[in-house]
Image (tube, rainbow, N blue to C red; front, side, top):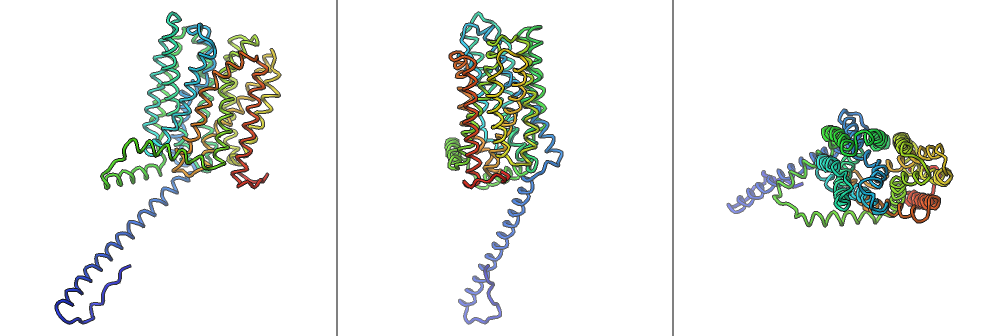
Length: 485
C-alpha cells in the first residue's frame, strides 16, 4: 500500500514544493486506486462465496423442485418415446418399410440414439455459457415437429422416400431434440442438488422410464384402433404439452445466473466478441483435455460399452421375442414392464448412491447385469413368464446405470466444468449408440438368439471390469473395499 508523504517536513525552493505537491497528488491517487481495488476484490469474494453456497444447494427451494418437475415431464415426452424405439421399428418392418432389412431400418434408430447422445458434445458448452432455456426450447421444438411430420409417413408405396423422411424426422430431428433436452435437464438438476444429487437425478431421469411405460401401452391401443397417422399425432400432442411445461419450469441454477451476468459485464467493458471458429476450437480442445484423466477414460469406456448393450437389447428385443413365438400384445406389455422396472431402478439406486457412493453403486449394479444376462436371458427359451422376469430385472439394471451417467461425470469435475466433461463422455456414448441397433440386428439374424445373448452378456462383463478399474483409478490406484466413492 502506498505511503502518504509527511507534509510537516519543510522544503526549500519552489521546485521542491512543486515536487512535494506532485508526490502527494500521485500518492493520494494510488491510495484511492488501492482502496477501489480492495473494494472490488471484496465484492468479487462475496460473489464467489454466494455462488459456492448456491452450488451446494440441498434442494430446499421451490425453484429446485419445480426444475426437477419440469425436467421429469420433459423426459417423459422425449426420452419416453425414445424407449419405444424397438416397438416402432418392428411396426415399420411389418408395414411401411417392409421392403427393407432389419439392419437397414436399424440405422434410423441408431441415428436417433447417436444424436441424442452426441448433441451434448456441442450443447454442453452452450449450457455452461447460456443455461438451460434455449436448449430446452430448441430441443422441444425439434422433437415435436419431427413427431408430427412423421405421422404423415404411413404409405408403403414409396419406400425409398418414406425411409429417407423417417430418417430425417425420427432419426435426426427426434434424436437432436432428445439430446438437447436431456443436456438441459441433466445440467440443471445436477447443479441444483448436491447432497441428494443421486436421488434428484433418479427422479428426473425416471421420466424416461415412465414415458417408456405410457407410450407403448398407448400405441398398442391407438395403432390398432386409429392407425399410424392419428396414433402418432396423439403422441405428438401430448408431448407438446409436456415439453411446454418443461420449458416453463426448468430454471438455471443460481450460480449460473451470477456467472452469466459477470461475463456479460466483462464483454461489455472489453467491447469484443470471440469468433465462432475460436469458440468451436476451444470447445474441441477443452473436451479433449478431459481424457487426460485416467479414471475418466476408464469410466467413459465402461459406460459406452454398457450403452451399446442397453440400446442393442432395446432395439432388437421385440424382434427377438417374435422369433421365439411371442405375440405382439405380449411384446408391448414386455416393453412396459421393462420401463416400469427401469423407473424403480433410477429412483431407488439414485438414493442408494447418495449413501454408499456413486462408483460403489455402479459396480454393484453392473455385477447384477452380468447375472441377469447369463442367468435369466440365456434361459428364457419359449416361456413367456421367464421373458417377463428377465424384462423386469434388466429394466431395473439398465435404468439404474443410465441414471448414474451424469452423476458419475459430476464426480470427475467441478460444477463449472460439468458441461464440458458431460460432452466429452457423450462422444463415446454417441458412437456406441450409432452402431448398436444395426449391429445387434445383424448379430441376431446371423448367429441366432442364444449367441446374441452371449454377446450381450460378454459386453456387460467387459463393462463391469472397466468400471472396477475406474474405481481403482479414482482412489489413486489404492484399493479399498470400505471407501465411499
